[in-house]
Image (cartoon, rainbow, N blue to C red; front, side, top):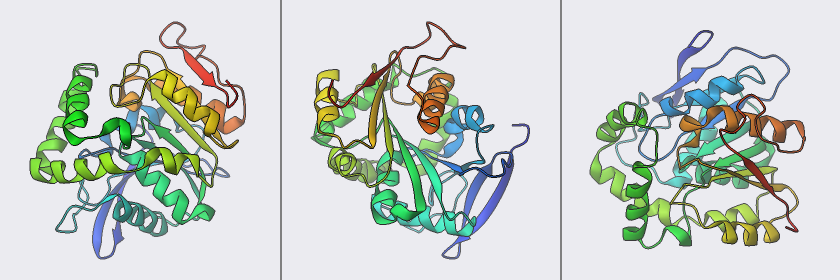
Length: 272
């Protein structure tokens, strides 16, 4: 994309690939964290839509995309550690993390382990927890979601899935489904925006989301994008970027005026 650069940094002797947007001086960087078994390529529509607000970075976590692996599949905690090491290698003392799917638990782990390094986190379709258990149920949810995503996603993610490998995918997916996302969100030490899609089968029903909203601490905001499935960073970049912009600015969350009727964003207040 115009104005974007590509770079490798070294983490524990291994090369990690990073996409870097145009420099926006005086801003807190936005770091976009990809989901399960894929690279950061599918995050680029939302990253590009936010690139004017702050310096934006889209890394491939170790073992994904164009980044070198560790010789074995890294779990959620290890990926969080590797993300922190990547921020160090890039010279980023503090950042706002924007994670999709598995990227959301990774961001949560970073926020809990190093809250001083995190200005805030955005959890787009945060996977993991009771709603995704047992594994056979989660696999069924994933299969239903595949039919709800944009057809253009196929050419973007299929090469990543094949490169990652089915055995690695099954091993990591099983760990991801057991990750206590809800508990981590309810105890988040940093400002947090959780964004769910109304057509995402991996997310709990709206009634359950409202229950979580009542339990959440004041620094947590929960919103729903009507019509979005799991990979909203790819399918609904304009709406998601607008929503994130409202949250970053401390403004009321509204529908995107530039795309009226495309989606509707619902703010779920704590006492709702």
